[in-house]
Image 1 (cartoon, one colour):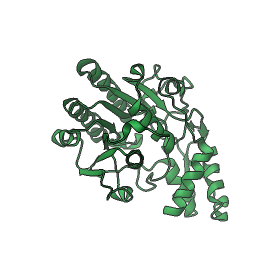
Image 2: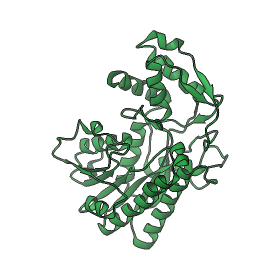
Image 3: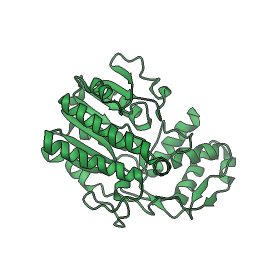
Image 4: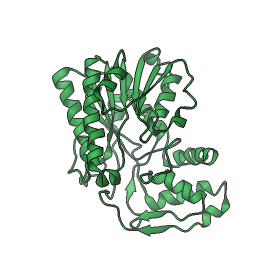
Length: 328
């Protein structure tokens, strides 16, 4: 898709060296925007920026959103902000709720204040499907949420509340994107809190048995990175006033069980290494804070933003596996 209105616009991407942020930086440069990345490299990686670091329209600021002065410096003269910086992971937040809150709430508030003071045109931020909490309604619709099940979920819901206040009190235009299990190129397979897809991919490539939490019947709305990029750019450029100051599910509108996901990974990886098809899958206990099923309604995003996801789970997994095989 072509977003001509972004040409020569200045866009700040916080967390721009992370999985989602670095992909957004690349696409914004493809759209001829002038991109500034703010990252402290707590979970992001400089190698994610290798393809763009020497681009004349790209600026890197190494800094932490927990520092208000850094946020003001990064927001200065920016037209738009894509706020991706956060400490993700439900288990991480359960193990260390204080740091998750400092980054995801205090850091978020710093960015809102800095964006307000810099008079940016729009502040688009990464919200989370974890906000739906214990709500059993399927599919998930934006106006019906439950009780949060983890400190991480609380922080992401607080983000939505703060964004709404900053619109009402200060006139800052915001859009929140509730990400549903995003996956794809550049997602880190390493570390204690690696997401399930890259973690399982690297284990299977090493002929190690992935361990599924529970019996594997839990299901998720796995969303390929290119669908998420589309949503962010649509949110940045939406001209319909009714589309702004909203939250939107950012997903594909389909769900896959963890067992089905694992079989799909094995099938795609076996094209490169037939032995992977024989790797045994193991099962462990359910993980604290996990919801059983997640499925998004994407009707609101379709109606108000013109969202049209191009990648279903099968195509996305195929693309992701190809990338991991070539790059790991």
